[in-house]
Image 1 (tube, helix red, strand yellow):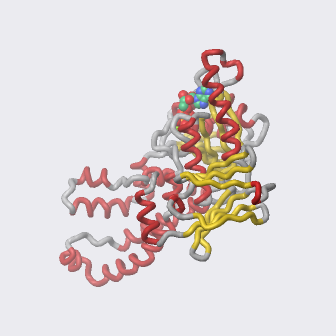
Image 2: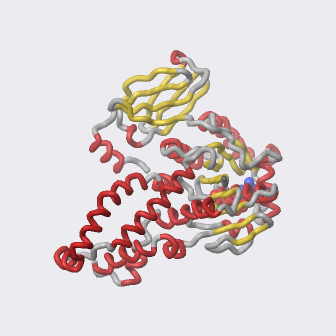
Image 3: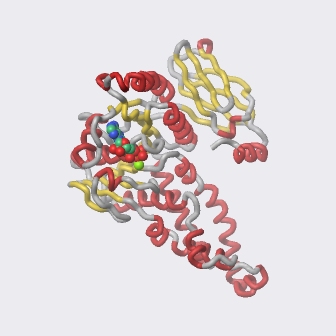
Length: 402
Ligand SMILES: Nc1ncnc2c1ncn2[C@@H]1O[C@H](COP(=O)(O)OP(=O)(O)O)[C@@H](O)[C@H]1O
Ligand SMILES: [Mg+2]
């Protein structure tokens, strides 16, 4: 079973470098490894200083790299669907080039890149698949969509099939739009199956670890917390947080203030992401490109340790719907209810025990929901929220922050 290590984090924090370094370390230790960029803004080739393309290319012994391309993915995965969509757009009067362009829907290019993960797992060519993913968890959230789209396909597709038997030309004349052909429905179903495969692979804690890279600064920590919320909400197992570019003690007086700020964020990061472990990688004093430099990053991060190990297993928190209420469960071992203080501030929930504090970013559905009560139950804090009416919650989600 191939291990999947997926790195995400705000742009510029060093995701690509860390992913590349991890992959290199795996390959050095004899594991057949591929590092796959699913970020639209590929930079793996630059990090390794080698040309890469849409198919795997060898970088070093045991190590391949790949930067998929959206048009290549379309040809591979959804040519049939795309030709229907462009037929539809062309019918609306868009010229062909424009119609072709329009069919690259937002998120589709990145989803297409993620589909490669399932291809590599199925082919069995690699022991480790390292993914240099996009900055936020947004696309992983999209990946949870197949459940919803499947519902649609199951209900619409049979109608479509019946329609095509009844006489498509007549219906098209009456409705005035092109009706999708059987093969379009079949292709859509195949695509949804593949997306569901990737979702299943990425949400399996034995197979996948999602790792968050951040810098010790305000914006990067804030974004990492948002991704962390998503990952837990959508069941993606995260096992490691990496604080990159940490200024060392000998950084000199010019960086003294910046180093002090970073050192101030470190314990906060450890508290807020705990029990998921936090590791640091120093800010190096030279440009970190090419195999030798990337290897230095890998060694700083893992030393002699195993980069493919599962560094943490568990769900620090989770939201369930029970008896018409939402229940937020937080693992808080060694805590009594009496010592715990709870407070809410717009979309944040602050848990405080003595000098220890954790801020959870509430999922959108809970932002406007009144708290009903909280209790400790066998090392787990359970907070009940009144569930807003279905329609209202959806409107709230749309207007909510992203
Ligand atoms: N620990 C580090 N020390 C010094 N430079 C680093 C370190 N980590 C990353 N860099 C450099 O920072 C820049 C951004 O890194 P990159 O990995 O491309 O970030 P991301 O993929 O998150 O956008 C690159 O020039 C990279 O070489
Ligand atoms: Mg990058």
